[in-house]
Image (cartoon, rainbow, N blue to C red; front, side, top):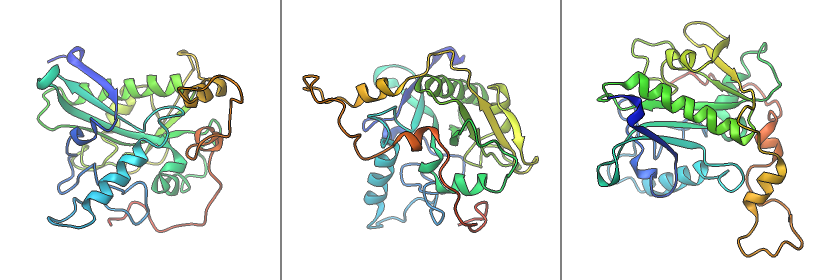
Length: 254
């Protein structure tokens, strides 16, 4: 099948449960907090675990944290229509401030540019039974880059890992990033840093646009804008977080 039959959409409450299982055995994206916490875990909660629902609720809140200002932090690839629609691909992304493990990895490469500050793609996975797995992943990453370009994001990074199975690391194969205009900005074959700077061809959103997205539906126009709601700020979206002390090796297993 061709990638023309694949559609892409940002994650929301209705599609959250449809995120497909990643390649790493025992993992589940709906409860994974591996990137959000240095002590986080990819593993599926044990049967009967009392915190399973809380972990899923927390994950959904994090993915939707920036929705009112710029958009959710996840995108799905779909094939089919209506009741036959199936999610076969998933990408998670966002500002560095949303993913402490990504920030810890980035701190190990002093030659990476501080400006323009990147957003990061932490996860890029396509179901193993998709015959056009690589093509779907390329289409998904291109759709993700187009979406971030429209949000005014000017640089994107990802931290894949060289392994026997390119799909087991959450960021997916290096080949997908190369096909989408990323280049190796630092690292080696085992731990490359892939980076792409966006040109803004899609028309970057300005802060007036972001404020408009947060305007209450019944607002009369007077007294607006009001202070931004809790969540992503200008620093979160467009600037690097402050430097933090050196942390344990983020590449180690949990």
